[in-house]
Image (cartoon, rainbow, N blue to C red):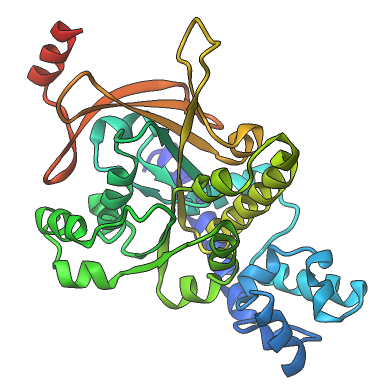
Length: 351
């Protein structure tokens, strides 16, 4: 046996031991009532605030627990106990590298797009799709609802979906159509999607803030908000409301990140765009939400239509570690598919 093989086996053994320790810690406190200092009355108040699970409490701040009526010191102790249960602490970078192996990837439905995403959409992070009307953002979301239910060997996560719809664009007919092509039972595929329509930005935030128990109970591995900014854009009008809008968007997105990390899920948001008529060079299309959305979205993908037909162009605009890249795909009756070399050549000639 070679030295390289011995080293690889040793690393796999260490990773396995580390993951086992994390799982054992998670079992330490299963319910919020198990946490030190949390009695029935405190637990009830925590649930009223939207903290139904140990994982969601681990991502809270002591200030957020003020309405519970406990002292700052006790709030800090409760949060620390919750964090110890899911292994949040200072660690060495080599241990972090091993823990990064717990990050999973979900196929986008296009091998070409997966390639520039280094294998697919990451769990524990937010992926943002933005583009003009009809660019395929909601189609991408529908496709991901199917993909996440596939087994890992097919690029899935064997999990369910939490879908928050703010623009009334979710269509079960499309899910059934895509499920049949993917070889899934359409009736079961529909059952694995937990859906809610958000009517205002406050309602949208409320749904996410009270989603932790649903995520845990239904093995949710994909959280979708389609679209993130629609209500905020329509309700917060004018420069005098910009600061308030951005603060609430910031809080909303940080909650989404916390849920994605706590439950090792993929978080996906779609975003509207605006045009800058005074921009004479480059693309005048920009996503809504400014720096707040830009900084909080880990991976940003810009979708745009080709001149005609089902062809879409997906550009990786931003990633913590991946280079920018662009690929061509298409939206068909079957869902998101790759474009053949012949279709690529045709498109190139049509430019």
